[in-house]
Length: 299
Image 1 (cartoon, rainbow, N blue to C red):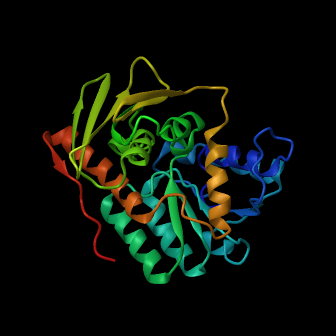
Image 2: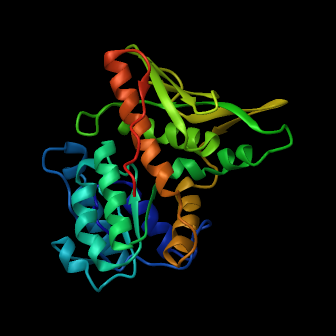
C-alpha cells in the first residue's frame, strides 16, 4: 500500500484482515506500506502518523520508508495517497514492477496526468484501474440494475461538495457523484457546464447522443449521497444511507478479483473521461459556458 494519509486505509485494513467482520472481504492482506504524505497538504500530512500506527500496531503491516522498498514484497499495489497531485509520480515508479495497481480516487487531478498514467500502463503492459467507492454503493448498484423501465435516458446525482485548494474544485468531493454519473451514462460525455454559488453547485454533462446528466453539490443542507436514474418509462431514486453495507466493502469485492486477474474495476477510457469531466467542469465554474472534455491521446 502506498500512502497512509486517508481514512480509506484503516477501512480497507479492517475489512481485509478481520475475518469476524460482518462484511469481511477475503482474498488479500496488506503486508507492507509506505506512509507517504504531502507536507503542503494538511489533510494529508496531519493524518499519516495516526493511520501508519494503526496499520503497524493493530494489523501487523510492515512499514517501509520509500516506495522502492515495497518492490518484491507485494503481489499488487493499492495507491491510496489522498493527494491526486502525486499519483503520476508514484505510479511511474511502480509501473516497472509489472504487478496490478489500484489508484484510489481521483486517478489524477488533470487530464494530462491521467493520460500519462494510461500511456505508461499501456507501454509497460501493466494493469491499472481506479474508482471511488461510492460507485459501488449497494443502493446505487441496485437502482442501476433495475432495467424494467427500459434504457437509461439520464441521471441526477447529489452529494456533499467541500473544496480543497490542493485537490482543486470538483476533484476533492465532486469525484464521488461524477463516478455515479459515469457508471450510469457511460464514458462518452462531450461537454459540461457548471453553475456555482456559495451554497451549491450544479454541473450538467451532455453526452454524445444528447442525453443530459446532472450533479448537484451541496455545501448546505443534505450531506448524503444519492440520486435518480431516469429510464424510458420510469425513474428510480436512491440514497446512500448510514448503516447499510459499507461501500468500501463493495469496492474491495471488485478490487480483489481484479488483483487476481479478472476485469478492471473501471475501464481505462472511462477513468480518463471522469478526470476530463471534472477538469472541464472546473473551467466552466470559473469561466462560464459549456466546456469541451479533453480527448485522450491515441494509445
